[in-house]
Amino acid sequence: MIALPALLVGTTGALFMENDALVAQGVFKLGLYIAEHGYPNPQSCTKANMSIRREWSTFSRPDKLHFIDSMKCLATRPARTPAAIAAGAKTRYDDFVVAHIRQTQHIHFSGLFLAWHRYFIWALEQTLRNECGYQNYLPYVNWPWWTRDPLNSPIFDGSDTSLSGNGVYIGGRNASCLPTSENCVYVIYPGTGGGCVTSGPFQNWTVNLGPIQETWPTTASNPQADGLGYNPRCLTRDINLQAIGDGTDDLVVSLINDAKSIGELQNRIQSSTNTRIGIHGSGHFGIGGAAIDVYNSPADPAFYLHHGMIDRIWTTWQNMDLNNRQFVVSDTLTLNNVPPSRNATLEDLLDLEFIGLPNITIADAVSTVAGPFCYLYA
Ligand SMILES: *[C@@H]1O[C@H](CO)[C@@H](O)[C@H](O)[C@H]1NC(C)=O
Ligand SMILES: *[C@@H]1O[C@H](CO)[C@@H](O)[C@H](O)[C@H]1NC(C)=O
Ligand SMILES: *[C@@H]1O[C@H](CO)[C@@H](O)[C@H](O)[C@H]1NC(C)=O
Ligand SMILES: *[C@@H]1O[C@H](CO)[C@@H](O)[C@H](O)[C@H]1NC(C)=O
Ligand SMILES: *[C@@H]1O[C@H](CO)[C@@H](O)[C@H](O)[C@H]1NC(C)=O
Ligand SMILES: [Cu+2]
Image (cartoon, rainbow, N blue to C red; front, side, top):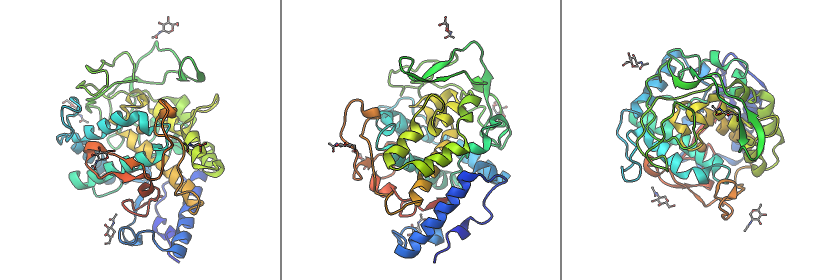
């Protein structure tokens, strides 16, 4: 038997919760599955070159600094997106933001959501490695570890090894409703910031595109209605204890344990109820500011760690029953099926536009160990 769990020994940080136990159980089941069936694509992925994605707090100080520097490096390289497609795309980092903005209405609340974002964050990881000398793998943020005190977490404490801290506090803001004020399922109160990030490595980070949905008072509007014009400004955040507080261990555990189908899993990850915002919304609204703009949210470097956690939940749910949970797809090709579109299929393409990687299909993206992907989560 191929002992994949051996790869994980010594990789856990100071914290270990029930969701981490499920992740480890999933890796064990994946090991059993591979022992029985072999690697799905041994030409491109075996134990010898499997990588492990880890929680931000378990990175060493040098590893944190390398990740931060590599993200900044992408923001100094020229964009590949033509100005005729997006005048606001100035940097290589912006190529990622543009691809996400242009496809927002197809890759959220749709059959593409999980697979497209898996490919997208992997593309960032590979681009950091191939173009900016990064030697490690994508970190993720295990929200349940930090629900009680996110402002003192290693990711948001504002230190030189964080992804920067909160935005400056802006008072006098009203609560808002999700998903819309007409359909008020969940009331969300303003967070603890709202303005520009002023501490840590990304205090001078420039957001070039959008906003499309971010409506905080400090945010200048984009010269183009589609948000693709040039609109350089600071990175805003609004760390929201209510929203982050919803991303609990029991929420993550129940997603993995209770979702009976891919449709139920992806909808529960993204949906709000009157008591909970869903783990995807919890991260976006918990970070706040630029991160609440569905279109432009990858402008905040923390986006990629949040979506690492979403991918870790999907991966673990799949690992629990690999025979039945890989080649499955649900929902259509448009956001909440507006405008109406056909059901997604395993042959539908994941297009990363000017990021510059080939189109792959949803079927190509359902396994993290079948190539092009070759990774596990600790
Ligand atoms: C893993 O190794 C194989 C064989 O050497 C190679 O073809 C493949 O590209 C590698 N995959 C990754 C993800 O590095
Ligand atoms: C908050 O709501 C009140 C009452 O609807 C309104 O008068 C006020 O303009 C709102 N403030 C902001 C900042 O939106
Ligand atoms: C931000 O810019 C200021 C002014 O140029 C500079 O002094 C400071 O070192 C920069 N901080 C970071 C974290 O890049
Ligand atoms: C799309 O999927 C739904 C839910 O699985 C199903 O009821 C419906 O028949 C499908 N539509 C088509 C055209 O296949
Ligand atoms: C990906 O597919 C789209 C059509 O869906 C096509 O326009 C585009 O050129 C393809 N990109 C690559 C890199 O092949
Ligand atoms: Cu997204």
